Image 1 (cartoon, helix red, strand yellow):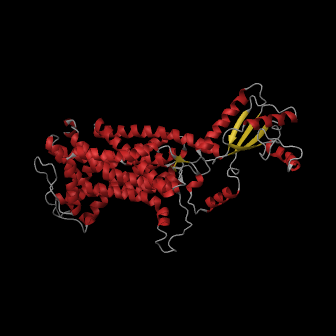
Image 2: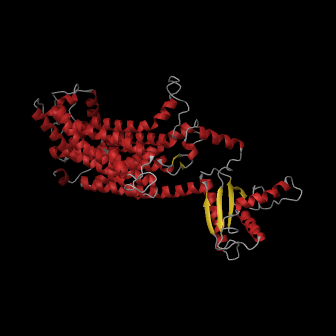
Image 3: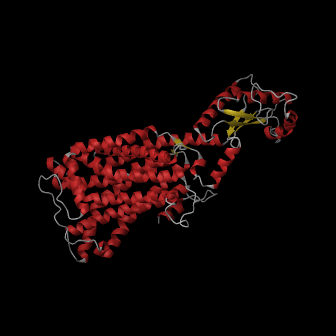
Length: 577
């Protein structure tokens, strides 16, 4: 249903037909991954509540089963809608990006999640009513046992299974020593978070590094770089367009010669132009009459004129081309810095009335120009979207929870988890790829931020709404607040952890080509093709998302949120609603 709806809204390739949404390869991957992950989470949370109510209210009639499903639906409806809204709003705000891959990916994924939510709240309950208690076979227990909380107790009554006993012990530790649990966990997360904050801008835009070392194109590029000048294949092309043609050939050659000399700034290896088509003569070095290959080079002037001066009708003697070979990798920050120095040199030439290029139109193109523009746009998008998504998700939490302090704390925990994930991810891949590692792929920080801030709130919302539910029954004072937090953590711990592992597993699937190659030594030779291409950026993003979801599931939701809820005195009017 979701893919059909997206196909209906998408623009047809090569035309303007459709509703204007462009679907990229990355978008399709995220639609599949997030639909399986989030959709499974929605269904698991609903099924877990149905199973819990069936165990506390045993019965064998179909009518009783339908009442259990209806009661479960009412219990989890608000939590599911709230958690889905945080994700949908966060992803939809990517529409305000300038880079189209970001601009269209967010809304498309958000639409898919809305479809998933509707299916979970409609088709899943109907299907569960049709299947009946058989849906939980063979693990359904008719007798739930004692799950209540003794008056004034601070920990839940131990349950029967190993998982339930684990959550009983953990919830007891958190509610008995909330300040210690909160302080130690914050201290442990602060170290990788600080490292992640320092490394936030260390990203690479090198498209050749995106492929695995075994890829044919990357091996070819490395071979060329080994035997030929490194940057000859990706020069910076400059076009100078005058309004009027040069009056004489001598003026044209003199203007090109002066501008070529000015272009030799720091970071420039050579400049090729009409007067020096091979770029062998920088300022201060002139070709003598009897220099080696002097006559051959002079014969190149005829070919150079066709290459570096336009011969198109109406543009003759008006357009001159300069090829600037950079000393650094055209994808690197150093190359972008050289481009800025070149632009600063050219600006006075265009504004000086005494210059031969006064009033000319400047155009630059090439790999470095494209990568620099991409870097500027995506970095501006990242700053804008990070602010918008944070504010948008915070407003959704305030509207749903009616507690701005709690909403602010939940945002803080997810941001802490994001920076810690960035630090751990950078450290992991720096270790794996050292010493050739130049940074995370440029797409990782933004996609990781949006998905973690939006999706990461799901589990917090599940837990907080359950705590509010328990507080309405037990109260919000003294030991009852501790009891409500402990019971909520114990009752939701297993299912939310399962949801987290499901979501993390879907993200791990994005790294499967890399995992198979790493396991190639232990697997039969015909199982894995050693030349299978691996997208490094997709591997890094999948690893980071899986790690971030696990941090949210196992640390933020398990310790940081319940410990804060024990220490924080919520206004009583909220829990009485």
